[in-house]
Amino acid sequence: MSGQLHIAISAETLFTIGGFHISNTLFTSVLVSAFMILFLLYAKSQLKQTDKPTGLQNILEAIVGGMYAFGDSITHSPKKTEVFAPLIVGFFFFILVNNWVELLPGFHTILYTGKPGIELTQVPALSKVYATTTEHGEIVESS
Image (cartoon, rainbow, N blue to C red; front, side, top):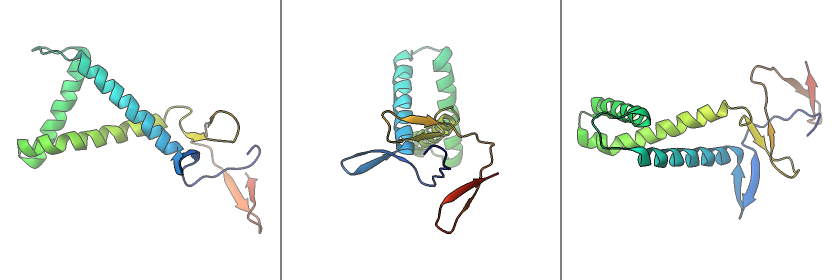
């Protein structure tokens, strides 16, 4: 891959387990899911029954209270809000954290090059790449 332009439209396959392809996006999603589960387990262990929450508990209660109030303003039913709010909030934060992780250096492109280990390649977001193809389908870089 050195010296050649590499354009990937679909997700890169990192490895295969029993015929199931593990792509870079699936790998990142599993990492984000694990992070969120560990964070929420830690937050749950820090919860206290007090009238004045502090620190992390205060932030989480504000987020959860705001999301439930928003859901209740839409459904006008506390029972429906209790059913749908956890699902909607879960999807919201999963998508939000996945998009934030994409902004971290090293997570932009994860691909397997055939060499031992996983090579992390960062592609500058503001760079423009111009390429043309020859009659035989070879990609030729041009600037």
